[in-house]
Length: 139
Image (tube, rainbow, N blue to C red; front, side):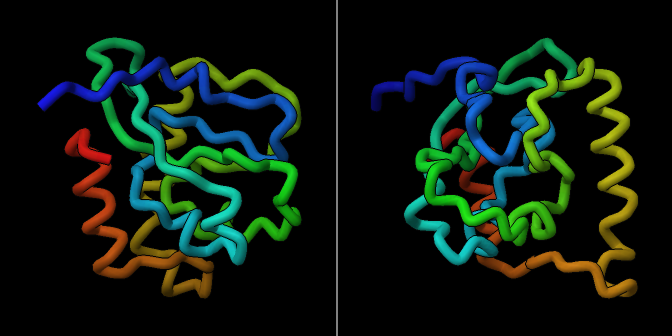
């Protein structure tokens, strides 16, 4: 079987998109696609090389906005993102890798309390299965 050709995650960043995704902290469970009413039309899953702290990049499958012009701006996908990797695009460059790693730690510690305080977040067995598939390098 031929290995999947993947480009660096920075190549998937689109400044014209209404949402910005910091792919190294994205879990790949596709919660954003499931929460979006137009998920199948706007989103796609693509292989890319990601590394959280800038070294030891691995090929992972992550959601990509292929049709940002269809986005209605409802922000359901942002509310569904468990890691905080998906946020409104304000045209700024992402922070340094250590700062993003601290942000990921914050969202990881916040996960158990999301349901308790009524915050939106979808977590089903299908997302766990997608997470395992997408982090195994098989899109």
